[in-house]
Structures are given as structure tokens and as C-alpha cells.
Image (cartoon, rainbow over all chains, first blue to last red; front, side, top):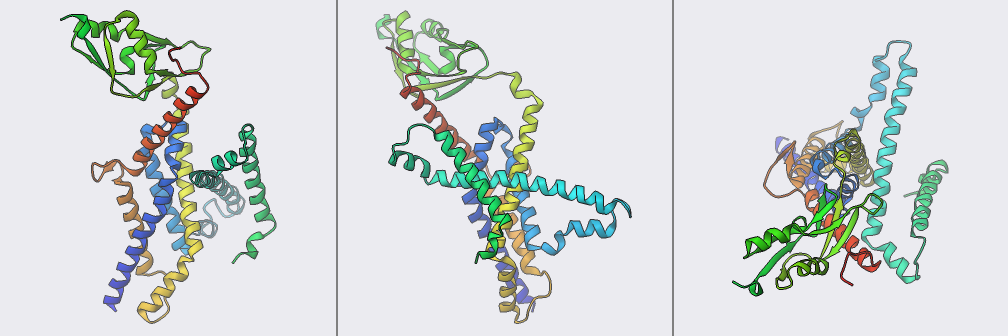
Length: 165
Length: 211
């Protein structure tokens, strides 16, 4: 029994090791964080950003692997953190704020990631060269952004996720 | 020693940021010369002046620099062992110390934090990590798992260790002296941007060059 436990610990640690290597190689090779830092002229503070990448990953890991312990909403409601009467209403506000934070910032990140991956494969340069595209690159980018937004809204409002595998 | 034999060695940099409006020759890189007097004078040759209405980013060709030197010292031969085109940016000092910068750091930090949290969750969701773990648990232990066990804990520890090794630092401290992957990528990105800016300036004829 004990040996099996040790075996599983080794398994788990190796899984984690390789997953972090794989996931972060993708994140690094698309060069998202350097680009943010470059655009915002905060390259001096790149350590803070790396720290945030580490902490964010650990948060996501915790919330998805130990999802039963991540129910802060349930905890807040059952412990009545804002008093017996006000908790439900107050937590609705607090929860919405947390969710909108999560939504906005992870949305920005995923949007940048999607286009960065497209760009790494040189989609846009190749296409514009093939079709002799000279002007209006800005409009094309705007169209891509709007298309992504519309697609995302349709996905959630029309329950497209129900048809996936 | 006659001035005929004087050679000025110049190692121009690819990208320089200046706080002053005037660009002198000493700003664009490192210089050396056997004649100290000539060197001192050449260093103070003015190459460009950033005016308010002009773009605060200019590309200077090394040919222009050589031309400027030869205007004053026709007999000095210039050997450039650095970059052929130099990108000069005029930056405002005050701009870099304002609360705006703190705000930017917080903004990007939030993106990095929530973005990676979302990414790893989506990844775990994609691969169905809890199913994989309960399957592995059943294979090893011979019975179904009840709640979270050693597998989940060790996975999380492995993940954390992997990231820390990958990024090469804990807190503010480096583990080895190597630069972190993000720092490396930052330099690569910087060099790419400089190259693109220089080539654009060249193509649009906006480079400060000899005619």
C-alpha cells in the first residue's frame, strides 16, 4: 500500500513536471508576456510578470484539480460573511466583480494568445502577400477582432458547446 | 604621426534611448582612436536634434555618420564594427516615473495572472484531468479513489516545481545565473522590433542617410 502511494507520488510529480514544461514552452514561444512588457515599457519589472504567470498557473491548477475546495461562493454564503441579511445581496455584487475581473483579463490574454499563435505561423503576412493586399490591414485586424467577439457571443448564447465532443 | 594614418573605430549600437534632444556621436556607440584629440572632437559632433513636432524615433545610417565625420576630418578613416543602421529614440524622463507606469504593471500583471489561471484550467478541462487521475488511481490501487489523494497533491507540487525550474527563479531570486526564458524572449522581441523599424524607415525613405 505504502509503495503504491510512493509510486503514485512519483507519477503525479512527473506528470506535473512535463505538463508545466509543455504548457509554458507554448506560452513563452509565442512571446506574449515580453510583448506586453515591451508595449507598456515595463521591461524592468519583468520579474513581477513572471511571478504572476507562476501564481496564476498555481491558482488555475488548484481550482481545476481540487475544484471541490474552490467553492468560495458556497463558503461565503454558508458562513454569512456579510451578516445574516446582507450576505446574499452583497456576495452577488462581490462575486460579479470577481467574475468580471476574471473574464476581462483572461479574455484579453486568450485574445492575444490566439492572434499571437496565428501570427507565429505567419498567417497574416502569407495571406496578404498571396492576394496582393496592400492597404487596409487595420480594417482586416478589426474584422478579425469583431469576428472573434461575435463568434464567442454566439458560442455562449446559442449553446454551441452542447454540440462538441 | 600624420593625420593620414588615423583610423577611427566605431562600434555602433542597434538601438539607443536618449533623454536629451540632441544626438551626439558619442551617444550612438563606442569609439576608439589612436589620436586622443581627434577622438574627443569627433565625440561631440552633433548628428540630429529631436524637434517637438518631429517623430521621436529616427533611424540614422552609418554612412551619414561617416559623412559627418569626414566633413570635419577628411583624412580620418572610419571603421564601423557595429550596426549599419542605428535606431534612436527620444524618451521623456517624467513619463517613466508616473503612477501610469504602476497602473500598467498592475494591468499586465492581472492579465498574466488570470490569463494563465484560465489557460491551465482550460487545459485541465480539455484533457479531463480528474478522470485521468481517477483512472490512474484505480489502475495502481486496484480500487476507486475517494476524494483527493497523493496523485493530485504530487501533481500540483510537480507543476509548481516545473514552472519554477522553467522560469529559473523563486520570488526575486534566481536559481542559476542564466537569464529566464521571458528575459531571453524579451531580447529576441526587441531585436526583431528594431530590425522591422529600421527596414521600414529604409523602405519609406525616412532614414537619415547620405544622398
